Image (tube, rainbow, N blue to C red):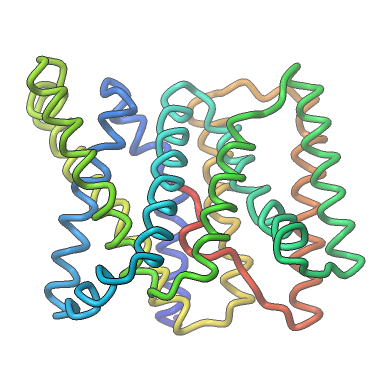
Length: 298
């Protein structure tokens, strides 16, 4: 099988089973999981960059204030998205998080239309409207707006919008973003430790190991995606990207038995149909675009 396909499948399968990993850490507050994810991600990706001897770019970027500002804002958005996702998974909202990543591509399209003045073809516009109807139906069914899904979708879409004009590759940009996150995260973990509420090395060896491995678990799918993006058509990646939220949805319903009454099937079906229409339109018109790596679920 094509190495690119294997890498792409590996990336989306890993993103898809993320809920299980964060569930294993349910005894650790979401804020501490987030901080460990930031710290160990930088350590891991810095090791990868060192092995590749890819360092000269950093000295140049640190002199560019505008670039640093963009990646600082991107890091803040990414941190917020990670926190909401981790908290929601351990608060038994996995199904709603999957909804966020299903609608995220269409939110990005909507932002492109409103903020970048991009034009939609008829099928694309129909897909966005259909997804909107699905969200409104789910809001009525939930008795509230599905705010977790919307927060995840809009934070990642805004993150993607920022990265649209950013000059660095995926691995370099992720390195810079984790550098921005590192000091606040490390300071927070030290503060928690000083006050006797830190989880690291206090909840058994397994929890400690899982916190350390949060760095590789976060970074490896990114690296695999980079391999896939260079080896297979973007149209194929466009379809592969729905593996992750589909797995998250199935995990929430069938493994963790989250509440999913039949009445909600209609709302999800409308959104799935909207995604199908938009994806097919992109392929038929040669517009083989996908959401950037950083817009896929965490």
